[in-house]
Amino acid sequence: MIPIRDSQTNYSKPVVTAVLIAINVFVFLFQRSLDPYTQRDFTFMFGFIPDNFAWANIFTSMFMHGGWMHLIGNMLFLWVFGDNVEDILGRGKYLLFYVLCGVAAALAQFAINPDSRVPMVGASGAIFGVMGAYALKFPHSRIVMIGWMLFVFTFEVPAWLVMLYFIVFQFIEGFSSIGDVFAQTGGTAFFAHIGGFFAGMALIFLLKTRDRYHDRRDLTW
Image (cartoon, rainbow, N blue to C red; front, side, top):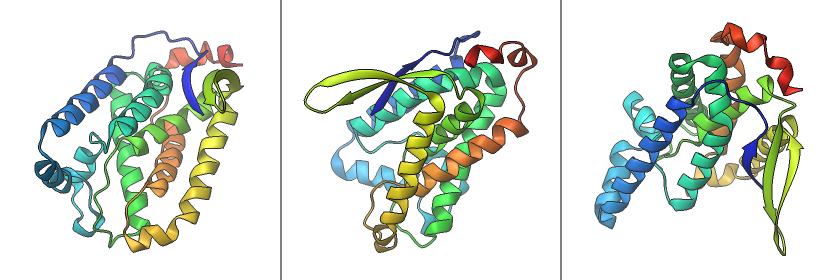
């Protein structure tokens, strides 16, 4: 299941969200322009490797992706949920929020396996932070999801249920992949997603929303 839009109204243009998406796309296209060997070197140079901890790489890894579907999926989630979180925080706070969620996500994965030599790349941790904030601030917003079995179909569900589904899935997949984590075989950084999600839930209160949000929050019910 993939979210494609939500019912929550915006009261400002999602400039930071759009810029973040543009940067991610630009970096990915640059990666794809490199030959396979240079791509590998680029990933090891700018991806986050727990065994070779570097704060700068936590930041650069947030703008790198491993493939087209990785990029498209992350950017779609960011577009659906990021605009509303940016709207209630304001652009400056939202950018800080996004980066801090990405840092928290990387540190969560580092805590699980600090000896890993597998580069971690992707915006997923920061985006899960956005989702955590959205879950608290717009729990009753309606999310249009796209699914597929024998055919493609769409359906609406409340935001809280969407977020519950995704975070429970991260816990299930994360703990079932513990063996792969310590075997350093790569894969999805589920614990980064979990760390980012709960960081987003905490940070949305610490950074505080703009005053005008309180005048219209009932629109989410």
